[in-house]
Length: 76
Image (cartoon, rainbow, N blue to C red; front, side, top):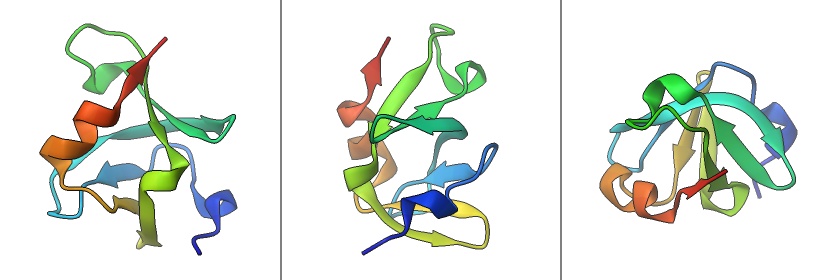
């Protein structure tokens, strides 16, 4: 099991395939809030911490490929 407390602000979030998904703003309520700069519409996106497979070298690696992970994103 991954220790979610190890997710740091400004860490890169990448898919299982190594594709950039976003940048961590912070973690709240079991979700990773991504920075607005990576969103095409300038809104915060959220990804469930349940998709986190590993935290390695300051990067958050998801269990899904990047193109699939973005389909799980929620907006606020």
